[in-house]
Image 1 (cartoon, rainbow over the protein chains, first blue to last red):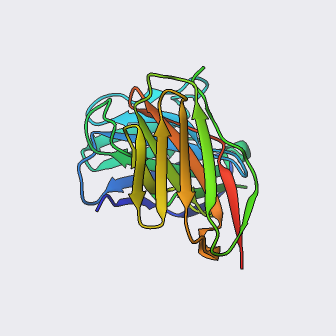
Image 2 (cartoon, rainbow over the protein chains, first blue to last red; image 1 turned 120 degrees about the vertical axis):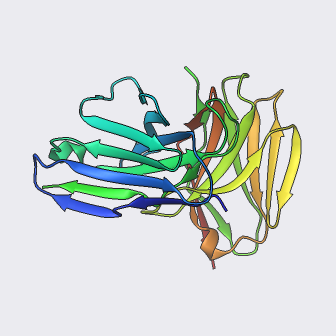
Length: 118
Length: 109
């Protein structure tokens, strides 16, 4: 159980392109999903918390107009990197969790999306 | 500033030995703790959850929590080369996870 699907797994595109990443919880409902970014040899950095039916909550320093998050259903959240530039190249990982906003259930991670902007 | 600290390693153990991974956290408000394993180039995979003081065992893995000392550990018995990975300790606080930097474990055949 607790399977999270994320795709695409890898994207290579030109600077200025917008890229959409999908995150789905396959066997449970996820009121809350999370988006992380990870640079090589560093730990995960939380970008934003995605809440079903409401606006995402962004961490300090993360541009909400740059990283658009939509959580339209209890099983799907999307992250769109708008007008991507080479400095946006990174490993983006989503996670999903059962329970409400302050649930202490574990987060389950998707397989990640490796984004490379040329 | 809420922090989770781990020794980055690498921690090197011979095959069959016990690997001991440690983690401390700064916020006494954290109530839930998790260990994730992350292979190079892959996403984290949940290994253990622990919520109360004491030990919790699952197969070759034992998680230990001491809230008074704000200390969490993970023991891996009979370590295998396939256990070689980075192990991330995480503390939950107000619904978010705060991750440590991770400890790299190398199990040598």
